[in-house]
Length: 406
Image 1 (tube, rainbow, N blue to C red):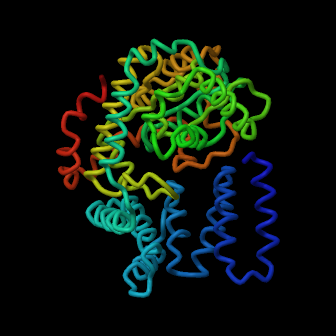
Image 2 (image 1 turned 120 degrees about the vertical axis):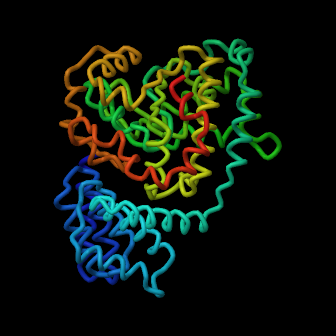
Image 3 (image 1 turned 45 degrees about the vertical axis):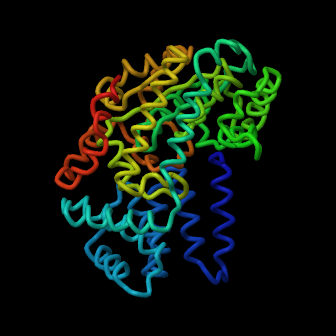
């Protein structure tokens, strides 16, 4: 959705407010649109109106916290805590309130209480989900088996020839939105959103007799050309006139083999972050949908380790295909990494990429406000404030603490 469409949506929601029986939901929707547009003051006002209409409206409180820049006043913290403790509060409102309270206490330096709320919110969300780490790990093992070097050698150069897409893959909270914003500041690159087209393509190639990723092996070259063309056509709705565009769906790291088969000239960038920072960043983030692996320490660590294993495999069978960009390197050497990224994309250097925070565009992820500011160094080691409670995470990550740099 472009800037103008968000403006239209705000106008429509405001019209619907007249006589609305549930105005809180409309105020929340208006606020989300303002946030996406970068109009934070108006977003805050609408979120607070939604929360004022219902004290236990967890989504409104969490949305304020999720701005990352909002600081709760003491009366607001007291109101949230009372709502979270009330027996009448629904489970969904309760976990939203827990994550909001975790952020509120974190900003006050009360890290013990903050961690308690984060842990409580995660436990509630995890109990309501159905995530099974074994399913993802089995898929990864099958991918490594099916997508061997000989498989790609047999199909070298096949697929749709378009070089329009730039895929940014990795884990959430890994710095991918920063890379997206840097690239979207280039005059030749369109910033879109987290597109679901590749996961839909993966689902489409399977059937009840041959699930993904086993179905990858039966794709002939003509099918790959067709699927690549279909991807290009289906994503036109998110683009304007710029020749290149970004597809920033983090979990596409599982589909690098599929991307390579159907779009062999597309660019792929792996956004990677130090594991303790990345994993804890996921633990304290409540996602609007998906990312069910983030609500338990053991699950997060297993997912991160699985991600490293699969990316190591892609590097081995598709050498040089994926550019790895470490978040810490971008923060410490912005221009050097920008030039490296642009070179990999075949794009000329443009100084606007260094001024990424000035770029006006819709940003819908949890980092939307952070990428509208100059480079954010303070976030690199924020997890260390919680180190006394993160022993289980460190233990579960094991050798990933060192090999993430490989």
